[in-house]
Length: 265
Image 1: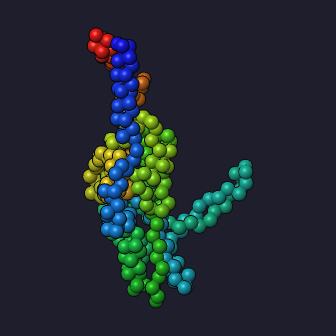
Image 2: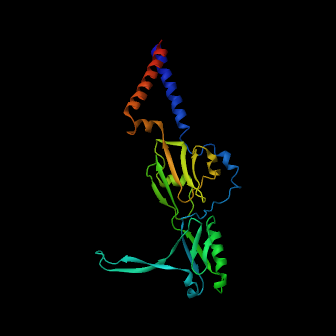
Image 3: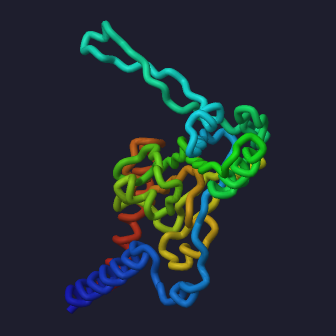
């Protein structure tokens, strides 16, 4: 009888433990909370930050007229395996946004573009070119160094380049191969630097479906995502004192032994 009671108690404990651990695993729980806002959400548009590299092209029906606004640099190209003969080809000059948020554009001079979206920057340059061109030019602005970093408890940590200038936190985790089984879903850290230089560390709970409504759902260029390890990974880690690990293991065993003794008695 005592043995049966012991087995039942252990089985119930196992079921409760498994239920408790499972509810911490799935992303975006209770989606019905968010779906009611589906018609009111706006599309995300990245804004230019200091130290961004911008690729800017100006096109008109007369290529010679727009040529002064498309600066090029000569890039070497290897034409032989032995690297004996080399040639060069022109590539567009990229513009580095200064800490003041400005770029130095040909003929026009300095333009403040920080805080503008891609379309807003294109409109600004297009309006500034009106005195110099007979027709309205086609201006294209792209962010050449839009990158985010993911590290911690993910399968493939690293820095990733985003070509379409739009990425959310779930897409970033997918780039890094998703979390490992040791990743803590409700304690993901986002490190972000604002245009003013202010730095923030934001805690994000991926279990909550209202994450998609958060201002931190979409990532900005140079954002860093850190996935914290759970206690199991921390205990199994070689970092830290081995004595503390033995103490923790011993305390767990003592607690289990006390529980078994109480049930048997």
